[in-house]
Amino acid sequence: MRFDTYIPCDILKPYVRAFVISESTEEKQYKVLPGTELVIGFQYSGSLTQIKNEEQVKLSTAGLTGLHNKFRVFKNAANTGTVLVYFKEAGATAFFKQPIHELFEESVSLDNFMLRSELLIFEQQLSAAGKDADKIDVVEHFLITRMNNTVPDKLVLAALGLIHKAKGDIKIKDLAQQLLTSASPLEKRFRQAVGASPKKFAAIVRFKHTIQNYSSASSLTDLGYEAGFYDQAHFIKSFKEFTGETPESFFSAR
Image (cartoon, rainbow, N blue to C red; front, side, top):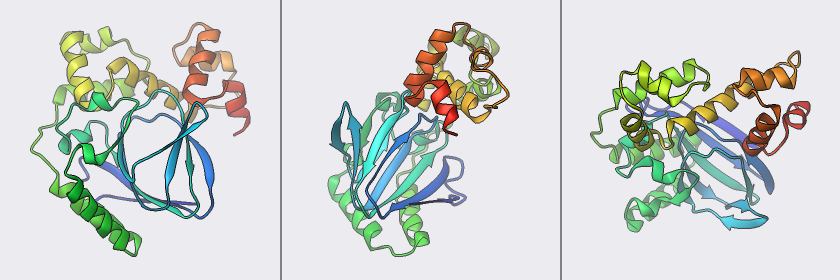
């Protein structure tokens, strides 16, 4: 299986973090942990399903996935190829007029946002593209033609910066005070632009930081305290919802 990353063109850099071309010659089941970015997947070969409660749900060949605060399990067929678009936080608003928070914990076909005939033409162009660079060019052109004149919300961008600075361990009341606003309008604007409430987004940031900065020298109790949990049982329960495993099992496998 390959997972090659490509930098977007200058026009898209403010909104798109990266493109990824993922290919697998063998059928494989795998787990995806929650992230802070919305993702579009364009399959140009094979098929992909999501496993929910032991049932397999086939995904659209072109779909937009919102933020999730729980792990997900996928299974690809043999010889599956996909171009993934990883938006920057709040970057998807430049391409979609719909409130982004409506996509929370959802994977939606792109034909909900555009004419099916237009999507079919794009998919044919992507399937006909040979090299990786050609596939990326097709996807970039598709995104550029869908760009709108949305102005980035400076309040939301400032909130994102503070959440990351606090490593996700920040109360929304304190976040609003630092931004000289009240919690209600901050939460509304944040949800519409980012795709989740500030509280849920901060929780994702907190767990991602915990995982990325784990050290075998630290005890799991210390890890829980550093993540803002003062109850070890609550930390273990939340960690298992995020990763599908207890902290001990998750880190012992790494």
